[in-house]
Amino acid sequence: MKNRLLLSTAAAAAIILVACAPAQLTSTAYAQEGTRISGGDIRLTLNETGDARLTGADIRISGTVGGELRPTGADITMTAMSAGSLRATGADIRFEGAVGGDARVTGADISWTGPVGGDFTARGADLRFEGDVVGAFDASLADGRISGSMASLRVNAADLHLSEDSIIHGDARINAADLIVAGRIDGALRANVRTARLSGTVSGPLDIQADEGRGWFRRDRNGRVEISGTVEGGEICARSVVISGTVTGTLNVRASEPVTLEPSASAPGLAYTPRGDERCARR
Image (cartoon, rainbow, N blue to C red):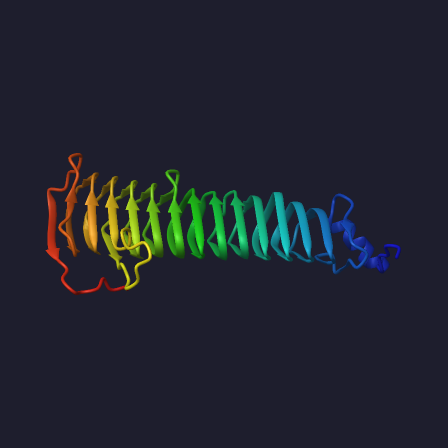
């Protein structure tokens, strides 16, 4: 069946306004109002001063949208992309570019590279994020790998890794099974975890609840907190705590086992209390 585009004269003109390069659309694609494009597969280079909304299966776009860019599809790829704000929903989402305002992304597999001028919100399974966020970072994930700077951080995840290049200028609040903090947190770290490894720097107070649970899965690791970087102090409840780094202030530890201090450790303000049968409460 030959490909057909059923477009009115006005709609055809709208395509030209939205795209500065010819649009490669499927036979079911159509455009209306200059800012809405729907179809199966969409290939566009956008040059839109206002908003742009795209709905399709496989969407591959680049260019500039001055207002809100809102793609919805199965596979969404945005490269060399600039948008005033973004709301993307899809299965696999890849973004490379810059967003001047807020960005909200919902998908299964999300890959992000580039700065965000407002808040960043993600809901998905796997997130690989590299960029600077002027506002708050908020995500609910299965697996997250985060690199870049942001004003504050709030994440619910199974596994979360804050890389050596990550900088949280404010507080971080985290619910995770396995947590790795290799970067820098300038504010407080409040975390409910199974395990935590802090090899970076936390300048604000800690509040870490590392509950090992009732099962036997990863029993040797669950409830364990390792500090090999530099932390200010605070509160830790865990099964076991191992310190090989530096604790600059007072650190109160309630644990099932006495704290292990490696030869390289410095923790003059350490205070240990046996935990007994008390569980580490998730707050």
